[in-house]
Amino acid sequence: IKETLAAGLMRMTEWDGTINLVDPLCGSGTLLIEAVSSLLGIAAGMNRQFLFENWPDFDSSLWNRELKMANRMKNFNRKLPKIIGYEFDDIIANFAKDNVKKAGLENYIEIINRPFQEVQLPPGLGVLICNPPYGKRIGDEYQLPNLYQELGDFCKKQASGWDLWVLNGNPKLSKYIGMKSNRRFQVNNGSIDCRWLNYKIN
Image 1 (cartoon, rainbow, N blue to C red):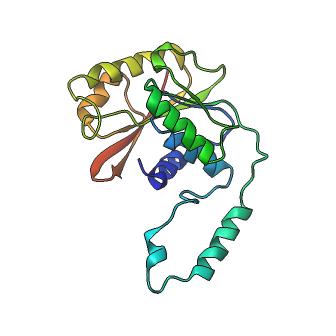
Image 2 (image 1 turned 120 degrees about the vertical axis):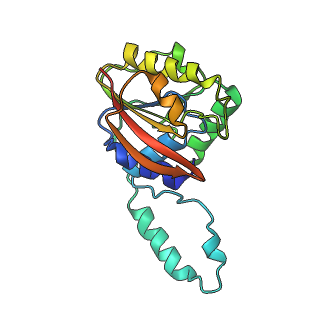
């Protein structure tokens, strides 16, 4: 998932940093990184090299002025609740930890190398966010129903009163979560038509 899309999705959740934030299938950690970056005033893609910088009419002085303005908006003094990403694949989990460090957010985001089925959520209310595989780029579509069912069971057992947000690019899979979405937004993840689904967990 691209940083800009992740940042936009997180704004749609209206998470404001007053309650816990957990990604049970965090992958490379992009959703968590963009969520925290936004709250701390770090612009999405701040450290990226953009193709437009190679355009003949690119104005580097104007761009540098914008970067300085964006840098002045950063606020690393803000106190945040528990922000945790779980990833069962140790290679991907280490990649997520590296991404968090590169973003300078290791004091805010914890990445744990463990399947979500084995974890205990932090006390208090919170928001669960995830971009699970949907059989288009990653995952076997015929094995994924079990994953979605386990995600739904996990939420119902552990996250009563929480919100769940799921980016789903395969409508056949969402029914296995076993809950009815409260809100849905149409988005594109690259060339994949997706839905950003919100569930109120009872």
